Length: 331
Image 1 (cartoon, helix red, strand yellow):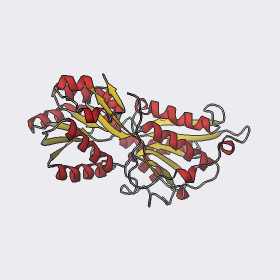
Image 2 (cartoon, one colour):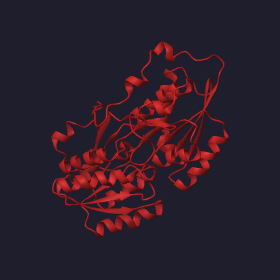
Image 3 (cartoon, helix red, strand yellow):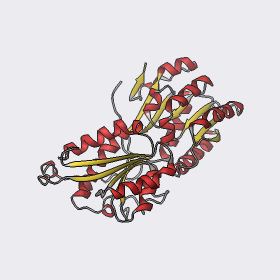
Image 4 (cartoon, rainbow, N blue to C red):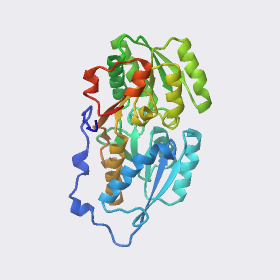
């Protein structure tokens, strides 16, 4: 199944604000080369497919990488202490704006400059984490797209309990160094109270922490695992999937690539769409728009992905009502 379903949650997006006739968008100043930066909280592998969407969106707007636009790429590989130096390095490259992936990277660049435009893609709650003043009028030098954070986690738990009925204790995998996980945990806690679930948080900061964290989950008799949206967890998706299967822990997360690696299911905003939307912000700013005047768009395209191979290994029968809603099923 390859259909995509759209769910509109929260504040309406700013699509109309960014919309301009394609004929106008396609006109670029001949001979002028624009220079922008990209800073990712995670690794290059995690951003590979979404970045293709960003480049595709830029091409539609008349920008060709290596032609009239140059992109300087930097990645923290999940090591957030590297972000300030990487942000400073991009500023030294004299870029006109910086596209940032993830809340930690956005915070690092915002601390490094209050004037250079910042386009954030696939961040959590930008208001709650202090990145912007409000969605319709972000103020300052930051704008872009948000993936709804806690609202999405609430939906993940609701779907999870439909797929694995009878769960009582759910473990949460968290990186305490990522501030965007705070609203995600809040969303999980409020939904858990409504569903009668017990939550227990297990902190992981690096690859070497995973084995001990999973051992503690088993000792705590967790019946399921919620993996929060975090660059480190995306980069380490294979070890997470292997440990979840080893300990027979049904797992839900936000990114479908982690389901491809072997966990049970995902529900979350489409990173591909958010990066593609980011291209429009880049174009508007390069044409003179101020980030403070461009409303932040909340994600409207969400994907439910189910790994049937994992379900069979765990002895789980996926309800037909959930399968019918899935955008993709891995057989």
